[in-house]
Image (tube, rainbow, N blue to C red; front, side, top):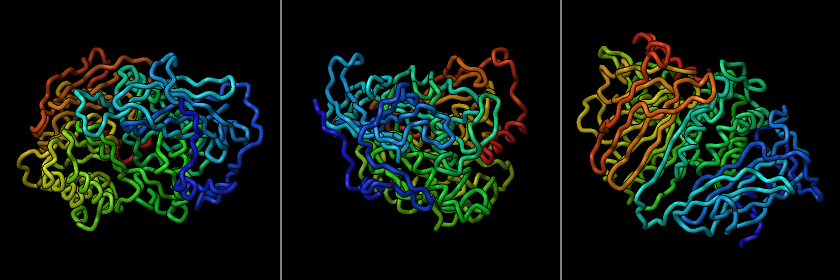
Length: 554
């Protein structure tokens, strides 16, 4: 049994400010005490109110996370915890009863990090299921389930992977998270908008506090979300690969440019607070400890020789949206000096394509990759916030996987609050052969209940031949990946304004190994009599689509 305490690395000390007795949040004017307490009194109430999580699996281990909170909605963002450092014990076992504990240790939960902990476990066996938990005094956390990746040279027979996006608490109940947890996949990708920064009320539940701009506000908002039992269940069910989009900070921000120009002078302070809170609340490695308004998030995770996950950050480094954002016909979208992931991350991705030996290369990223022209005439009117607004950048990435001979490139996308499936081309003005596939997950709740169409087609599909499927219901995408095929199931819940709905598979597509393009294998529209509402007109569908993507905080 390994009982070695988890000590911070030198990089953690330098970047996280733990080398001294205080932690300074660069640019935010906040100094946080993180000195260890001589005798921290164990609270009488259970402090494990925010659940547990694991993430970033490797062949010999993964990251474990928890955060202590007695009062999750405390306005100061510190969860009602005393300003003391608590020593937590953790265990990893091969069974859910913890009869066979294979690793154990202790870790300090410090007030300077909102009593969050990140334990990087090593020395486990590859390709195995494990269970973990934390203890503080007599208080025991719920147990979580994690899985290690296979050895780099092995090709596993199957991988169960799901991906999710966009959970806005006031828009409804997180039922889809709970249904996903019941599937117990090997790994879950969260592609952004884990929480929403806006204040105000909604049709389901209400945000605590105003719009988040301070560290206290972001911490409180994460604690509110993490108090949800369905979200806790999804975290406990499988390790996560998490990346952000915009609402973890500010709607449609680009690099160091906020949505509202007037907020530019103080935006990096806000970004520093948001990035710190994100790290504190996600199962991320020490390599992602924030440095003021910067955080290293993009990374690559290998699942043996079966799959590579290229997890992208399409917010922190991007060029500003062309022509003032929105849906536009904008020549600047073709400017080769502009990049959505930033030139350095683009090169990192291209290098990954060239070095790949995987059967499947999966890009976990945020915004729509394929074209969606909303004008049936000769004009091309597309979203400046998506890859359509960075066409030269998209061309470089696509050409990169074509030139590298990537065997099966698949783009995984969130952001747009609807399920879509799309073929991908190299030249969008003169579409030729299909060179890849894009699977887009709907939101967990953002957009409210939504609706279905019996055809499974968006009106734009009439002049966008790449668009193969669409539904405006909420849900997630569940996949089964083998050496011979990737099967994607578009899972939906009929309503989110009341809890407990059952999930169903609205459509299923298969991508065959070495064959470009999507093959539909199931189509299950939701009957209007069951939904008790009809599909709106084409004009209303288009208006809803554009509204959700340009003002998606409601």
